Structure formats: structure tokens, C-alpha cells
Length: 337
Image 1: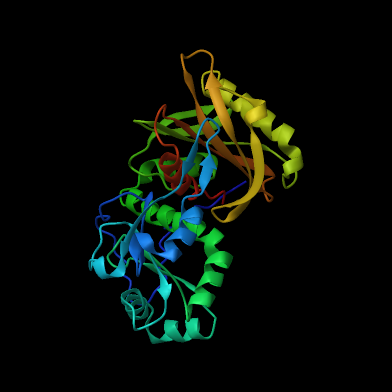
Image 2 (image 1 turned 135 degrees about the vertical axis):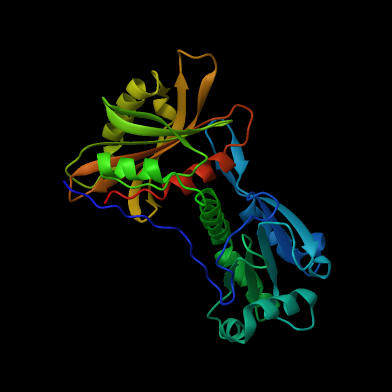
């Protein structure tokens, strides 16, 4: 069936005066968050926020946090901190340094919304400088702020992570491989924005699929597909397992999965609902070869195809989350028509 190319840049800015041109990203890691409060390390707000920001995630053979927290007092905050992620937390009060900074950033309209209880978590992209993001957690008084953190705390990591992927994607796609993008759309009917950091590693017909690779350490993104007559669900786990097992055996030089280490969940991936399968891969043909993978199964109702976007890492002794973040930022540009 004929398909058309759909490319989405991924640039989304929330905030009035944010700069829209990204030149060079600020120094520092996407995995670090600078938390700014009135009392710094002695802040009661820091103690409440850290468990949410430093929640652990399983990568099968290890657990990792998405973010590492550094804390400073608002009085010590420089105009342009080098951290990519900044979180300001405090009561909206002109009598404190953190309150003054929050009021300055959100302006009269934001202050009114906070006072009316219509907003408590505000995001400012490209502030204080391009490529950075400032997240503001505030309330009119101490009791209300404690309630805000208890209610919205579990969402903070997701907000930060989503912003990190968007900013990382903009940086990676500053120099896209348009030749590969156009060729894949012409040949297979799907679109994906390919960063210059990744090379087309494999493009075969039996079974059909493509793989992109970046080293070192190894990050691989594969796309494959099969006929499928209905929206997949979590109850289809056995068929989805078999679909990937067959593909990776043939295309990844006899890769296997440990069935008991494979999990499934329903998620949003880019603009699509998807069944996410994730777990541990290994290869008996290579010494000590194994690692984390996750695969997103997306159904194309019109063409009755099930697309699989396959993310895989091989990074012994290295943190997995930054690699997976990068792969997700890449993979979320996938479009099937």
C-alpha cells in the first residue's frame, strides 16, 4: 500500500520567551538534576523530592536511577548554571530567595494561576539558556507545597525524562542522514529520522527489517514488521515473543532471550499506543554477549501490519539508562505512514 513520508521535528517549547534555536547544548549530563531550594542540602523539600527523582529502574541485571540529584541554596544559584536540568522548589513568597526567583520566572500570569490553585508544576524549556530546562514546583504556602509534592512528585521524573529526550533528539538530529531516511521511506513505506551518529548496519529481506548501529558502547535500533489483523494486547505476549525471537535469531546472529526475564506493558511510544516487551538478550555464539533490550509493537490498522521498533544495548559495566534514553529519543521519530 502506498505510503507518504511524515517527519516530525520534535521541537516543543512551553514558555513565553524561550529561545527556539539550539546551537550547542549546555555542559553536563542529561542524567543530572540541580535542585534549588531555600536551604539547599538542609531543605525539607529536597528530602521529599529526592525519592521521586532518584527512583530506581530495572535493567534486568542491574538497577539504575534516571537522574542524580545535586542540591544548592537559591542564594548560591548562578545566572547560568551548567546543569541541563534545573528544578526550583519553594513557596511563592517574595520574602525568600527561591520565592523571588520562582516569581521572576513564572511572571504575573503564572503567579495568579498558582494562587488560584490552577498550577503547581511549571516547565520552562530553554531557560536559563538554550538546551536547558527549568522545572518549577511551587504553591502559595508550606502546607499546599507539601500536598503538591505528595500528589505530583511521581510525575516529576517523567516530565524531566520526556524533556531530556526532546532536547537530546534536537541535538542528534541537527545533522540527519536524509539519504537513508528517504531511501527507507521509498523502499519500505515507513519514516524515521536518522541521526548522523548512527549508521545503517543491515538492510535485508529475509526476514525483512533494517538495523542502525552506534558504537562504543553498542546501541542498536532495528525495525521489522509482520502481517497482523488486529490491535495487539498484553494477552498476545506469546505471539509477540515468538515474532521477536524468530527475527533476532535470523538477523542478530542467533540472539536469544530469557523468557522468564521478559516483561510486557502497554505504553505510549511517540504518537502511538504500543505493547512494550523488555528483558534480557544473550548470544551463545559470542563470549559474554548479552544485555538489555526493549521492543515496541505498533499496529498499522490500514495496512494490517505490526511494526516492531527494537532497541538493544551491549554495554558491560556501563550505565544503561543514558543509552536507552538516546535510543528512545531516536525510536520515537518512527512513523508508519
